[in-house]
Amino acid sequence: MKVLIVGGGGREHAIAACMKKSRRVEELYCVPGNGGIAQLAQCDPSIGAMDFDKIVAYAREKAVDLVFVAPDDPLAGGLVDVLKEAGFRVFGPDRRAAVLEGSKSFSKDLMKKYHIPTAAYEVFDDPEKALAYLETAKFPIVLKADGLALGKGVLICPSLEEARAGVKEIMQEKRFGSAGSVLVVEEYLTGREVSVLAFVDGRTVKTMTSAQDHKRARDNDEGLNTGGMGCFSPSPFYTPEVDEFCRKAIYQPTVDAMAAEGRKFQGVIFFGLMLTEDGPKVLEYNARFGDPETQVVLCRMENDIMDVLDACIDGTLDQVELKFEDNAAVCVVLASQGYPEAYEKGFEIRGLENFEAKEGYYCFHAGSRIREDGRMVTNGGRVLGVTAKGATLQEARTRAYEAAQWVSFDNKYMRHDIGRAIDEA
Ligand code: AMP
Ligand code: GLY
Image (cartoon, rainbow, N blue to C red; front, side, top):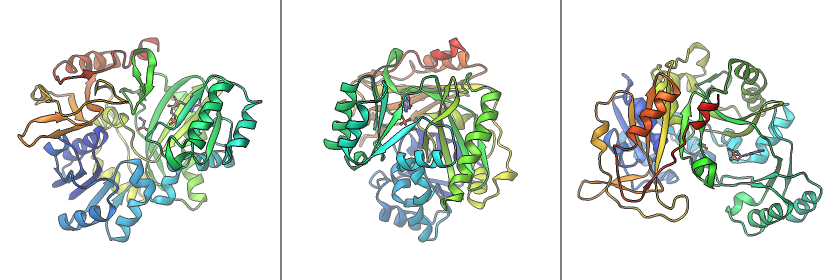
């Protein structure tokens, strides 16, 4: 098979690495790709994930057999529909199904209608009404821009004053653009967060191993929210009892609800869960693989990924048994100093050869590119996702932090406490 991946981050590198292992994949392509992906796949950095016409033309030129759409924006924008209309076989939800992530008010209303456990909430399209509601609300409270906002459209407000400022920021100053025209105001939940990714064929849902990411920029969960500074899998807090509850109350009901709404979901659903004292609740849905969750999950999957993708597309997932290695993985993100705000790019990355032929160690590229002189240089806020497997989470963590020292670039920074929560389990 010839396969085209749309996207260009650490998640896509991990997907490409997994596909590269498949006996069935002959040629791999990726747009825009990045410096690391370019070592596994033919990339075209001039084609962005939102350049739908160019992607269709590229897929035609390369005569690909399957297109895998990984990021949220093209999914919400309907790239899957466009590619299907052009006659391609595609993995990923269509526009009507991707709204599960693309609109938080849609997903909240869906959960309410189908009795799927989630935080209590209200939806507003008028800032005055939102402000009036806040006057009598309980704090802390959570404000969420309705639409996609690079994972940054959520504000946790400890007091009325901060919530008022938040409404202004999201709805009036439009900090997240049109994503903030509608606002979800949500009850603040406490507990352990867990991410569960699942393959879905429209009817059947099969979960992968659990994971947990670290969104804040600095140690001890301080600093700004980021796209993710690290991740570990499995989560020791995701017990068989929690799993059983979620299967019955969350996973299957979500897939059934989407089908009942005429929005059959085929692809990956990422269930962002909070394990509260009153049981697991859904914090958010994503209509795709997570980043950096994918980096610690797919490297532990034993199935040939192409078989699983085919089953999702063909509606035969009930016949697939997903198998994961009985071990653990930890991913430590190496970022550029200043991320998630201003940072410099273009620094040479040294030491990548240390990962060659090292079983159980991976260096997934999130923001890199190959410079004209052939050197690999930094090209983003998050640069690399250094990942290691181990028999236990502790061993995986020790190895990931060792491997994080194998590479260097100017302004490199990382968190030092990825997976520390493991010690409390
Ligand atoms: P989301 O993009 O919806 O996952 O939100 C980003 C992060 O905000 C989550 O990973 C949580 O850490 C936090 N968060 C979202 N909703 C809530 C909530 N209702 N209560 C507490 N924290 C939340
Ligand atoms: N790691 C969270 C996400 O992919 O949205």
